[in-house]
Structures are given as C-alpha cells and as structure tokens.
View 1 (spheres, rainbow, N blue to C red):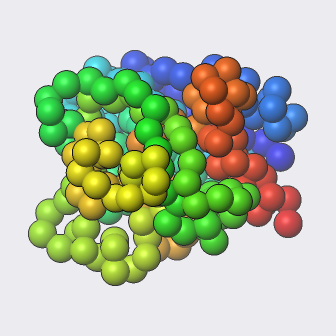
View 2 (cartoon, rainbow, N blue to C red):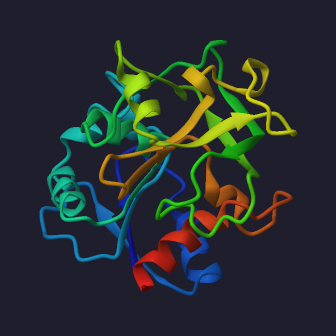
Length: 229
C-alpha cells in the first residue's frame, strides 16, 4: 500500500507521516508537490498540518488553489481515501470537500496539549481498528475551532458524520474539555461519501508511544485494513 503525502509551501510534519507509515506500518510513502498536475496513483492521500502559504489570507485558502487540489478532488470523487489533519482539515473545508470551517481558538491563543477524545463512530474506514471508546491524541494549533454557517453543524450532526469529539478523561462532553471551543466539541468529521476525514488532533504525534501513547496509529491501521480488503 502506498500513501501520498502532499507538500505545500509552509506545510510541516510531512516527515512525521513518513516515519509512521514507513517504520510503523511498513508501507510506502511518496511526497506529492503542490504543483502536481498528474493523476494521483495512491491508495491514500494525506494533507498534513502546518501553515500553508503562511495561513494568508485565510487558513487553507491559498493551498486550495494549488494545482494538486484538482487531482485530489478527482481522487476523492472516485472513492480514494483522503486524510486532512490540522491545516489539511482547513484546506479540505476551503475546497468544499468537507463542510464547515476552522476559526481561531476561542481563547485567541495557540494550543499545544494532549486531549482525551471520544470515538463517536468506529464504523468508518478511518476508525474501524480503534477498539475503545476513549483515546488520547495531541493537538497543536491556533485555528482549530470547528464551526460553520447556519445549519452546517446541525447537518453534520444529523447525518452522523462526527467521528471524534473532545471529552474529559471519563468521556464526558464538556466545554472545559474542548481546547479550542469547537461547536459540540467536534474534533473530526467525515464526508457524506465516507472516504474523506478532517481532524484537528494529530495522530502522527501519538503513534509510536514516544509521547506516552500510540492511539493515533489506529487511524492509519484502519485505512490500511480497509484498503487491503
């Protein structure tokens, strides 16, 4: 199985995904340039975090105009799995591949911490290998507050597309447990088609146990299991 990792100007963490996928999953990886205009022949595409185009004029708005996005849209429309994490999530909302948007954290500051996360849906292609209801992952962002125009969040909720939700250590959904103030504590959503996920928690930082747990690895294991079948 081969993963394609998209590299945008100002993006970061791409090397972390190479480590997870090559060293922990024994799969292949390849960097994809933001200027790529060729057909994407991969089993899964990852849009990593960072600050593409310095987050100007709005997070993900310039990256959405990159040539590679036309190929990513085509890849996704044909059922290809796409994972957008952090800035990648922002880019997917700007490209209208996912509903809603990511605004500045409610406290107006960058947040870097580990969070407890309740798994709302373990039947998706990105969560099927998770065998527990509560996991831990790291977050590190300034624009991570999930929201949307009138009716957007309700629609995502009613369609069962919330995959992960911030919680406390007991799995309770409280405002205090949501680091950036996302509506309904939303941490990750999927597309209607189920093959695109956007998430603010960073599974690559919680994959090899270096920071105390490896819960994030199950996100990638889930994709591997689905595609392999």
